[in-house]
Amino acid sequence: MSLRQRYFKSDRTFISTAAIALMIATAGLSSCKTTEVMNNGYIFDQQSLDLVPVGSSREQVLLSLGTPSTTATFDGEVFYYISQKRTRTLAFMKPKLVDQNILAIYFDKDGIVKQKANYTLKDDKVFDMISRTTPTGGRDMTFLQQILQGGGNGVNGARNFLNNLNPGQ
Figure 1 (spheres, rainbow, N blue to C red):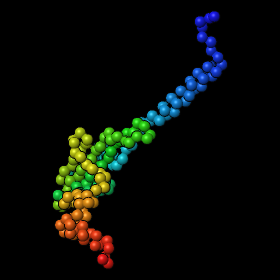
Figure 2 (figure 1 turned 30 degrees about the vertical axis):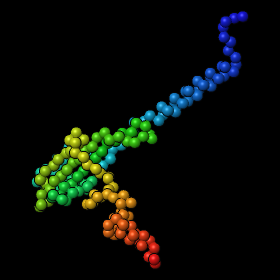
Figure 3 (figure 1 turned 135 degrees about the vertical axis):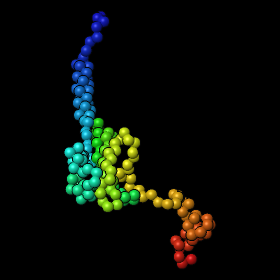
Figure 4 (figure 1 turned 180 degrees about the vertical axis):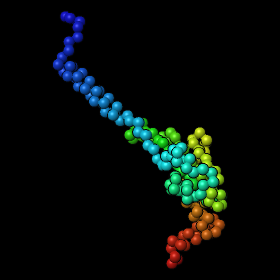
């Protein structure tokens, strides 16, 4: 009797099927690997920025740079031109913020450019573009706290709430 292992036809079929399945899986997973670069917002260049020197009018800024991404009017008017660069390595993953530039054009009370600033991620200036929340005064309360403090102090608030549910009683 020989010590060599004998390969049967079923063994060879299994090994070849496993090899083909491995190649298909590798090809399928490697096709998911794409580095997608997404540029959002206003991408400005030095030439367009040179068209807006300090002392320019608001109209000249609008003609040269276009409509700003957002504006602020609290402490004088400010135009913000925002651009972001995000990358996504896999098609189903969340994009990662790689670069962010914010060009801020500050105006004085007469609508004349008094300062230009270019903020990047390195400046550690946090700009929340889409927070979808409005800050309000007061405090956040849970549903139960709202019921208990509804129309007066604790028990009266709950009683008023229950009376409003059943107005005839």
